Amino acid sequence: MLAEFRIRNFALVEDMTVSFSEGLNVLTGETGAGKSVIVTALSLALGARPAASPVRAGCDAARVDAAFRCQSPGVIKALEDAGIAPDEDGTLILSREFTASGRSTARINHSMVPLSAVRALAEEIIDLHGQYAHQAMLRLTDQSRFLDATGGAAHRALLQAMAAQHNELRELRARLQEFRDNAEALEKEADMLRFRIKEIGDLISDPGEFDKLRQEIKTLERGQDLADAVNSAYARLRASESGPAAQDSLARARAALQPVAGVSPELDAVMAQIEEADALVDAAARSLGAMRGAFESNPQRLEELQDRMFQIKDLMKKTGSGSVAALLDFKAKSAERLKSISLDEDSIAALEKQAADLEARAADTAAKLTKSRRALADKFSRAIKSELKELAMPGAAFKAELQPFDSGLPAGAAPVFLRPTGAERVAFLFSANPGEAPKPLDQIASGGEISRVMLALKSLLSSADDVPTLVFDEIDAGIGGETAHAIARKLARLASGRQVLCVTHLAQIAAAANRHLAVSKKTQAKRTVIYAREVDGADRVREIARMLGDSGMQESHDLAQKLIEQAGEF
Image (cartoon, rainbow, N blue to C red):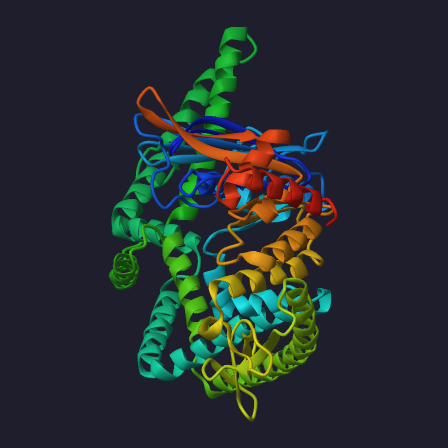
């Protein structure tokens, strides 16, 4: 439940803290006193967006803090989803701050969160019925929502399946239509992709090939130079008839030192070095000998490789690839794109079959949803009539009528037209007087009648909803006389076991309150300020007498006292 609400620098509120209790809490005051300002501030704390800047003139920022006490599983899950640990004693504080520059921040238990997290949490703890909720009830989309809200788990599963299948079918048909509308363009794209994939594949298949190609070109470009260098080096190392070589010189040096071998350790070491040098020269000569003939001038091969290198670089430029790896990645992505736009008849036929199967499933789900709605509508209509009887409308007729859509996604042989919510809308038909055929609610109901229908709906839905706090901003619009007693009795019963906050102009409702808050304006330091105070005892009697028309008359005081006593019997 909402335990405390603090408002600072908000519109005409300077700094106000209001405490609430379980049961029926009412806010009363003169027209324009600022009662709805409090409800507006509460709606912003719950995640609504302001229609205009709420910051009090001359202030830098406005702030609202709503403190709740609630530990339901839904609240705990919403907190966990927002990354916030639940408080041990169940305290929950929703805060919003608005700057004069137009920025706002939201917090849950002092931790900054996105506004979506606040809204998700608010849905678990409070249901706020503002002054313009009557208008929402008159919209057919909202009438469907009201009826569907009375359904159980099986009905909700059908709603979810219907929405998912409708969206999937719409997307699938859009893909098919795209194929049909863009067949020529897609075929041209497919031809280009096939050409490019083959062109790249014919030239190169992995990044390592490019390095090998570049090295072979470099080798062929210096082929004759390499061959001449190898032959010349070989001739200078290996002994031959053409002239003295390194090995000849080493052999003569070794022969010159042989006669004194073993005489001087120093010379023996030099002879060992000559032996090692001879072995190294011999190894180098053998390596060069193996290379003789490996390097040659091959202009034809060089031209072929250079042309291939040019084509690869040209493709890299055309495809915007900065490397061979990027070029091969382009090829892979082209293959994926080609697969996705394949226009062969088998692919289109497969999509058409998939769409037909999905259409059949969606039509079946819609039929089941319609059947479920019919059952709900009968039960719902009877329950609303019973609620209206308690609200001083014993002869009222009410019917939740299913009206098939005349546009949407066609499905089935008939066909039916599908939307995410099914194959039909729900229209509330109403008649306040016996003998009159029910007609659309927005065409015949007066303001007071609509208020009672809305209260009947809220009363009915609350029995299936575990939201602990209900807020009504002037649910009594257009109501007076005996009907006011019926409304007061209904609100008092609705508040049994839960918390109800109600902004009201009716003395009968105020008399039924468990906590009564009087809202008024005063001027201080040449500024208008809204403030609220709890009234009880004689103060409460005076406030209710004021609501009756004259707080100074004894008759009004006596009637106010009588209303309070009567309300105690509700």
